[in-house]
Length: 259
Image 1 (tube, rainbow, N blue to C red):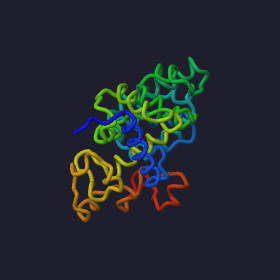
Image 2: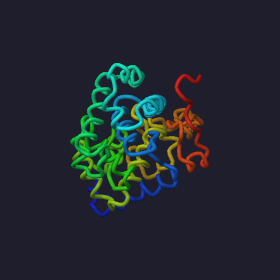
Image 3: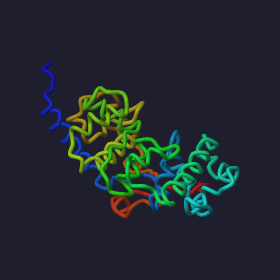
Image 4: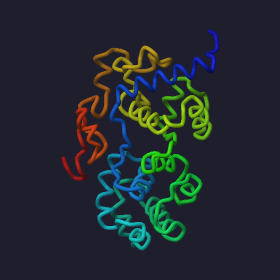
């Protein structure tokens, strides 16, 4: 088989993104937030748990500690109690109190809008920084989470395994202005259809152009049963999703303790 040229790869990658944009016109960050501070805290809390669990937990956190000043001065034991459902709650408590202190001491209580400043905050790496830049400040960034890594490798956009190398390789295939929405499209697809263990190949709208077609269930009826969130008729991850998502038939998630 002839190796794919760079031009062909760019064309194919952009076509997949265009198709995903039609499948998920309402793609969005799946963490509830009202301002950059809430988003950076929620993103730190989302490590090794679901966005849904974070969304069920943060309302109580932000009701009690609405500003960086409040959280910086919080009693760690009380914060741990609120964050317990998110797992690793001691480490996460340390991170969110630490990052709140850094915001107060170094940035006047405001979340900075620059990558080099964000990554200095406790618990904030490039992935979290790009989530904040893209979704709170409208600055382009690629969110290389586990879904993104899995799918871009399945699609043979890159063979890299390290997040920063994946970020550079995929970033080179798209104009910067596409990066934030591309991240949402890919992550939405990874969560709903192209799962880690059992991709729903037989129910995947981009199956005809996917080099990994057949890795998962190809029988359409069986594949349909694997679909998650609104594609499978279930509620999404956010308690307060954007209107476009609701208009497209998406359902908000239930609050903590419901059902």
